[in-house]
Image (cartoon, rainbow, N blue to C red; front, top):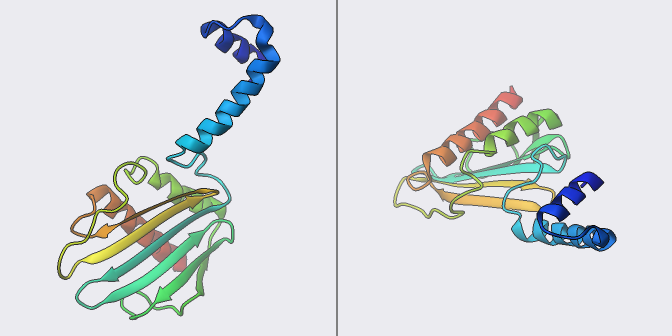
Length: 172
């Protein structure tokens, strides 16, 4: 915060001018405490330590696979492919190389999608439903949303489709 902004804040809050150093120290401490206590969304979706994980299981055929998109390593990795339905990779196989800009572009889709608001567990429905686990991580921030295709909100299902399409597109 610039000195002129600190002066404006002190004046608006009724602080006298003579508390400069103390005010700056309290402001810094308060910012650090509040940032840690109130972090419910990532602060910078363009960070280098940015990752998304999508796991899909279930359905009548027993689909079971997981992929990780990681800006830090620049890789899309097939973490799990147990049934060869919906996946065609070996476990741990690098599926594609990606740039941080590509991952940032996908991360931007998470903002405003409803992923950071609402529930994290939507539950499952009976029979022939796909179960999804979608995780978003940036630096020390992580959020995971789980649920079946019959219970997840449409905006989360749309986001899952975008992640699947992203993986398919970078593999081509």
